[in-house]
Each structure stands twice: as structure tokens, then as C-alpha cells.
Image (cartoon, rainbow over all chains, first blue to last red; front, side, top):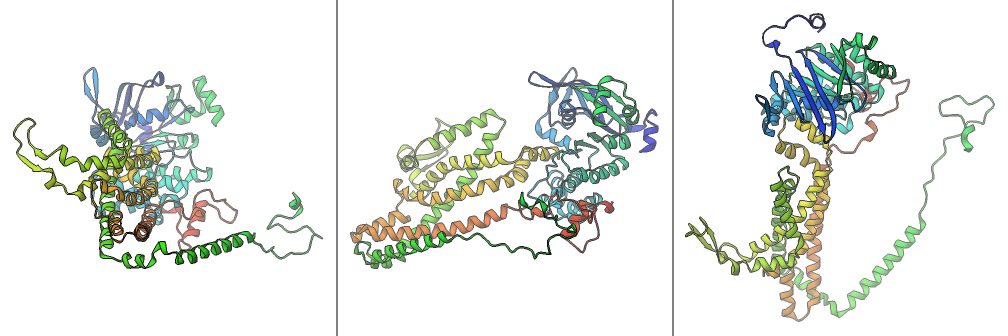
Amino acid sequence: MSDQMTSAEQAPTGADATPMVLAESVSKSFGSNEVLKDISLEVRRGEVLCLVGPSGSGKSTFLRCINHLERVSSGRLSVDGQLVGYRDGGDKIYEMHPKDAAKQRRDIGMVFQRFNLFPHMTALGNVMEAPMQVKGVSKAQAKARAHELLARVGLAERADYYPAHLSGGQQQRVAIARALAMDPKLMLFDEPTSALDPELVGEVLDVMKNLAASGMTMIVVTHEMGFAREVADTLVFMDGGVVVETGDPREVLANPQRERTKAFLSKVL
Amino acid sequence: MTDTTRPAAGTTPPPGGSPERSPAKVVKLRHPWRTVFAVVLLVLLALFVIDAAQRTAYDWPAVGKYIFDRRISEAAVFTLLLTVISMVIAIILGVVLAVMRQSQNPVVKSVAWVYLWIFRGTPVYVQLVFWGLIAIIYQSIDLGVPFMEPWVSIPTTAALNAFWIAVIGLSLNEAAYMAEIVRAGLLSVDHGQHEAATALGMSWSKTMRRVVLPQAMRVIIPPTGNEVISMLKTTSLVSAVPFTLELYARSRDISVEIFNPIPLLIVASLWYLAVTSVLMVGQYFLEKRYARGIGARPDTVAGTVPTAAVPAVDVDLDTEADPGSMRHGGDAR
């Protein structure tokens, strides 16, 4: 990962030329309330991008647009060169049938603030569910893979526990394993540590750091500036539905260029 | 606060403080009036039973004679069959209707709404009489192109006997109520569950079947148990069809024979009670089945207070749950 950061300017080769996520003038309104205004950004393969900003700045909405949990109002948003939730028709884009949109989501993992584990299934069941139901993987295969993933997030011994019997940090780690079970090419994290007790934040961030080190492309909405500084390749500061500042996290955090960024960081750092 | 001068547990008592006290024994609050009330009730019950045993109008010998009468036990089987078959159809149709009402498609949504409006808005007795007259309204069931000679034509009376007409009447009515119960269950499931399943690439129907419905069951089962018991008793209305082989109609037939309705009412009531009791046991086990993963062992859930002796919550949880395990969250990676 570290050499990727240094070679950011270097032209990628082959299929890697397509950015993993490409947003072109993405706007989104809820009624008359415009929550995203003309957002354009690019996430390269293997890049870790942290989205920070005050609540209501549109960062979570943007994240949810990437896997079409929210529809964009205008603009183009593509993952791995494919428009998300829409079919390209020149100057117009046509909404997809939900079944086709569901197919696209298989390749995009998402981790939620409130974990959203399935409470009626064990940790193992949670991780096995999507591969079996969506990809049609055999039970034995899904089980083996789920055990492997739970071990990877440090919860090998918790496989048979129901979510209600796991701590918040453990639940979130199961949620990460569940998303990884679909072998996504992109992982979205929507404030993954915001609902956790402070002492449990570390264990989840550790898992995410390892994931980043393994080369996963990640977009992380977070308030953890330490994590952003340490792990992210790019930091994007959003406010009021627009991208205010983008750059190397160490530079942005140490020396913000915009007044709005300065004001925000002075409160959270 | 009178105990503020007492040292907190674990700290050394101040020098010259009160001598060491043994831990106070807890004396539970007593409820003497409960016992008194229970005794009074038992006495009243005994009086009622003794009195009832002596009253000739109850005709206890007749109760004893008919309680295991073949006609009655067969009628109980019919009652149970009517209940179970109608409920199974009603639940399936109710789930379909509830899901239809949740649908994004306005056409589907309206169809479900109209169904509910009609079947919930008219009395079940009236509906049963209507269904009983179906053979007069539609003499034959025709398959084919409208206004042309039908390919197949079956006389309605041959296709449907009174039992199945009763089943149709009961289940279509009940489905309207089940739909609302199922809908309440669906609404009780957190929206995040929908999102999580969707984000994993599950289709809407898979999300419903695998994620939302199983969780909704916990909310759906108790009122459904109620509906089953209610259905058991509603079967006594199917004489409107008329279907007369169920428990209530049968016991009325017999009471006409012996010119005394009271003992047969007792017989029927005892059978209804017996069947209800069996159904309640079934409900208990169903509720247990769908309570998986909910509640239980709240002591090990997040938020345990960290102490100096236990460095991390994760380790704390491990040692609490399986003391033999030395592994914890941090070192498995």
C-alpha cells in the first residue's frame, strides 16, 4: 500500500487504468433539499479514501449513492467503469430494474454504523448467508470461507454466537466479515465506529487497517482523524453537500487550506 | 443519604472505624394478603362445584355419556380440520397480502387494500351464507375464453362440498386479518436489516424471505395464536353454509334428540377447551423457536465496565464465556 501512495502520480497499467469509483457532477436532492451538489471525485484501485465532515454534510448520502442505496438525482457515478444503478444512454441515463442493481451490489461491500447484523442468525450464519443466497455457493464452501473470514477478523471462537451476545466491536467485525464474504472489489464504511464504546473502536479500526494493507479499495466515512492520518491515501473534506478540500490526509490535517476545513478540524482534533 | 459515611466496598475502612460487620441478610417482602385472597377464592370455587354437582339441570350423567360419543369426537376432528386448513390458507394468503401492501407497485398495493376493505368490512357470518349460496349464483365452474363455449365445465356442487365451501369462507375472511398482523410484523423489523440485505446484493424477495419475515415472526406469532384460537371458535358459525358435522352443530343435533341443550353445551365447551389447550402448547414452542438470538445472557453484551484487573473488554468477554480459551480478538489476525 505504501508504494501505491508514493506512486500515486504514476500511470496505472492495464485494466487498472479505470478508476474504481468515478463520480462526475453527482447531485442528489431529497425534495427541495439538495444534499449533494456537483460532486466529482475519483478513487483509484487499492486506494483508501476517508470522507470527513460535519454531520449533514452529505458524506453518508454520497457513500450510499455508490451502491445505489440512494439514487442520484443527476450526474454519473460509476464503479469499475460501470454506471451504478443506471444504464448509459448517451446524454440520458436510464434507471435499472432492481434485480440488475442487486447484481451490481454483489461486488460492493458495505459496513454500517449500526452493524445491521441479522439477529436471527449466528455470526457464522450472517457471513454465510449472502454467498449462499446470492451467489449460490454450496453450504460447505460458504461455511469454510465464513470460518476463514471470522478468523481473519479475530472472531474464530465466536462463530456460533448470536449478534445479541457479541459486543459492539465484535458485531462490527462480523459485519465486516459478512461484507468480505461476497469478495467485493470495493468496501464502503459508513461511520463504522461511531456507534461503539470508545474502548471498542480500536479493534474495529485494526481490522480495517489490515484490510487496507491487503490492498482493498476502501471509502470510509469517519470521524476518526487518527485512522485517516495513518491509513488513508486521500482525505476528502465535505460540507454542505460539496467537496471543500481534497488531499493527502497528513497535509490536510496538519495544514488545511480552506477556512471551513480549519474551523472543523479545530473542533475535532 | 445516611450511608455516605460507610466506606465503599473494597477500600480499607478508616482507622478506628466501626467493627467488621457480616454482610446483611436480605429479607424478602412478604405478601400475606395474596394467600388470604387465594384461600377465599378456593372456598368460593368449592361451593360452586358442590352446588353444581347437585343441580339436575346440568344433567351430569348425560355429559358423561356424550363426552366421548363417537359423533362428538368425529365432530371435534372436523372442527380441528376446519381450523387448521383455514388457518394455513389464511396465513399464506395473509403473508401475500401483507407483502402486496408493502409493495412499491401501486396496482398491487390497491388490490390488497380492496381485498382487505371487503373481507374485513363484512361479517364473517354473512360471508359464510354467501359462500353457501355460491352454487346457486354460479351453477358451474367454467374454464375457457369468456363468451365462448367453455373447454371445461364442472357443476359447482360437484366441485365443492360444504366442507370446502366452509374452508374457503373462513380462510378468505381470516386472511384479511392475518394480512394486518403480518404487516405489523414486517413494519417492526428495523429498516437497517433491509439495507444490509440489499447492500449484500440480495433481491427484494430474498430479503423478505430470508431476513425480514423470520424476524417479523416474533411479532407475528402471538397474535396469530390468538387468531387460531379465535378461528377454532368461529368454526361454530359454518352451519351458515350449511356444514353441520363440526362440534357445535353436532352437539346441537344431539341435544335436540335428548330434549336438553345444557349437557351438550358443556360437552362442546370441554372439547373446545381441550383443543385450545393443545394449540396453546404449540404456540409456546413456536415462540421459543423464533426467539432465537433475542434476549438471553444480557450480562455478556457490550458495555461491561472495564476494571483494572481486566485490561480489555474483549478479553473480559472471552474469559467469561469460555474460560478455557486464551485467544482474544487481537491476536487472531
